[in-house]
Length: 322
Ligand code: ADE
Image 1 (cartoon, protein in one colour):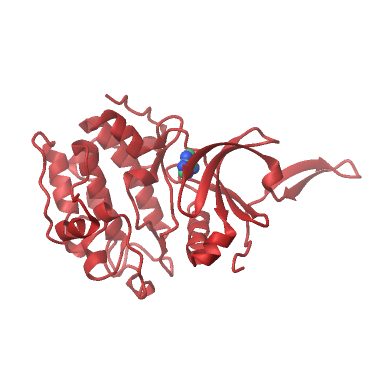
Image 2 (cartoon, protein in one colour):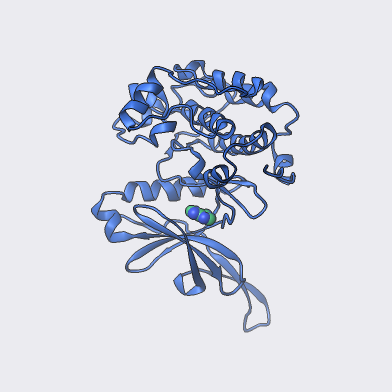
């Protein structure tokens, strides 16, 4: 209905034309170009399947969305947000890349990077907790990817260990941009409003009803119904805490009680929580988003001492989990 194919990625096939010249023929991919395999995940509006491109034998994850269901449940907007944000975030190893989109009568298809290591949450549960070295590595990769998305004018709004996938070499790939917010116009970071300022994009989100996953929701979303770049950094603080403690900082038997804990900043550190990680988390889990540690200060925090930000991080061998 409202779904439009705009600027969809196309493959290129080299063919020899009638004059013996090699020509690049743009080639729209479709369902027939893939062999579909195992189910990787199931959401309320979608199923993710492993698939192989029959021409190249490259493996992908294909997210299949049921059009009727999306229209009936009024989720067309969110599907378009996911496509638009992914199309803005094509140049970072830490974000699941969108290669092609297409559709048939029944479904929409997003052809994505395959993250064969699964969710960070699953790996964490397998090991119960991460040590300081593993926490530093995984959280540094998450932060590097979040910094890139923020620079591209995208707020994720639902960062959590389920949305952090791992590739075959255990490098991070952030997914699920269906509830992201695109800030417009793309901002000039250096002047005017400081990075991480709560007014970043505050103008675009008046009628917002979306609330992310309870345990990672920022206090400003609960009290002001407004998310900003700093809201992702609150969730990032929750993730660092969870990797080291084995559970998120704010957890109760129901959502309402979880929200009450969040707005009261009601959490404690378990014994043995590393000192520099504690200091960083305390500077991220700050109720006022304007007082939260901004991106560049996080990168320079002693917890991340020795981390080389940018390309180097993604060339490292992932530390062995213990
Ligand atoms: N589950 C959801 N998205 C996925 C992806 N891109 N790769 C692997 N598993 C997934």
